[in-house]
Length: 393
Ligand SMILES: [Zn+2]
Ligand SMILES: [Zn+2]
Image (cartoon, rainbow, N blue to C red; front, side):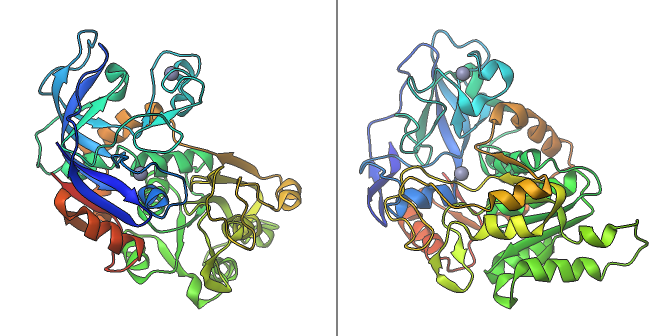
């Protein structure tokens, strides 16, 4: 089968590799119809997370079940399925509580597993013609319709980008009428902001420094905030001061936002020197901007093994200095971590089917799998206006 293979830092190739096949009785093999390129793929591409050369990349796959192990009961040959990025068994201590990102069986000796991520198990990725799905009864979300229909690009975003964005709004406890800020207007950030609107937020601010992303944020109904125009915390406080309407006593003290989301992670840019990274930048901004009693959701990736930590503020094991006291004194709730796909995938599928949600509005580029080296390069260099690229296989 053809597959996108990590070769070396900033080098991928499309190569022939051994076909994915049923290895255990509870596996299926899926013929991939669409897969998506994710910012997390760039953590490997950039040589930050120690991916092994030869790794088949991709953790956002949609396709048709082609082969079924003998112990699989819920999924049949010919089913259309989306494959959540974080693999889980469905029945262990954590999965039974809905904490599927912390599955205790999928990668023995570790917490959680995923396709094509260093440290997350031996699972090959879905930027390939075929992909093996372990614990298939748990890890296949069955979908209506047929490949290439009007929901092809919506459904592929359930694999990771939208569930991660939705999870961020859960971590940040976004409720009706909340004021919300999302740092980062890449795919996950935009879909976190989109989820906040679906949950009834009254104001959603989307912070970034790339024109096409800010344009997309505005198109989707968020207030774009360009960090190149100055401190985003001050910009948002100013925008909120200018709102019409009556105020409750003391409301002027609540000029920040009630819920904040980090959709950037450890590769945050240092605002004073945008060519440099400072992994503390976003958390510092969020701590300044969040209101007393507010809530934060940290959905951007932080890695415990950074091969090239930022000279200022970075740390090879991810131990960062954060404004703990400011968060304590404001009584802020902070949620962290990977998305528990099991909780959200079928709900998000149903929002698509009912017509209430069209997450595919964030997709800007379509590519063939054979073009992977070019789109990885352009996405990595943040050129060409790429917000989200989908491979149509
Ligand atoms: Zn992803
Ligand atoms: Zn489990």
